Length: 95
Image 1 (cartoon, rainbow, N blue to C red):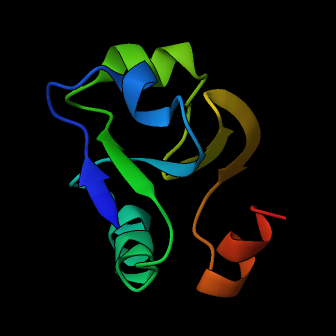
Image 2: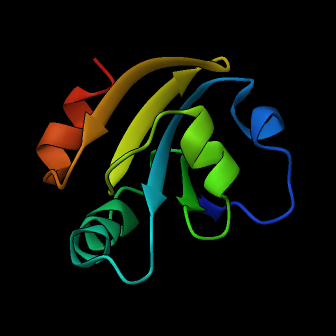
C-alpha cells in the first residue's frame, strides 16, 4: 500500500511496524522507474515523500540523492538505499 505524505506528521506514520519510505521528486527519471516497481508491491507499507514538498525531511534523514529508500522499523531507521532497484532487491532490504 502506497501513501503519499501530505500534511500528516511523518513520525506518526512510521512509529509502528515496518515501512519503506521513498524520497523522490516528480522530475526524477529513476524515481519514476522506481515508482512503477513500488506500485506492484501492494503487500508492503510504502510512504512516498516528495523532496520538493518536504525538504526538511530530506535534510533530516541525510537524503542527498534521489531516489533514496529508507526502511523504518517501529520509528527507527534500519536500512538506507540510494538509487533504483528491482523488486527482488527492494524486498531484500526487509531481511
